[in-house]
Image (spheres, rainbow, N blue to C red):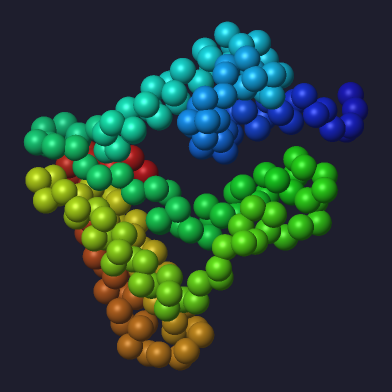
Length: 198
């Protein structure tokens, strides 16, 4: 047994992470062949195609119909919201951590992927919450997933807590408690209806 890093294993590990999905979609958009993709992942052309055929199918469907499948009994499909809308900081930390771990020149770089992104103030992040809610309500034929609304409401509460800590605004503490209460109700609604995924 050795602790020596295995670059081939690292490449395969990369291929199994969520980072591979957008990277693969980008390569397919550029008409990169499966032979080249397989070579980069250190697998045969056919193996690469088999491993990612579901990702390809989702990518192709998204080009025609960028919606989630409709929940049971719903008349239409609901609008999707990317994970970064719920937890933008965490969404950025994951690729940063992966690059630091697997790409030696970036081992001492704090934010190798997200460094070029602007740092948002708490107030700027708060503005994004109603924008995300507006997106969820974009298709009036289908009510938004209560669990998605709950997660955004919990994010709003967390941001209000930060405002209390940073600015000492006591009214924000009350608003945070109200937001958490709404989130609890929405999660209960999601459990009752069987909607939502996390």
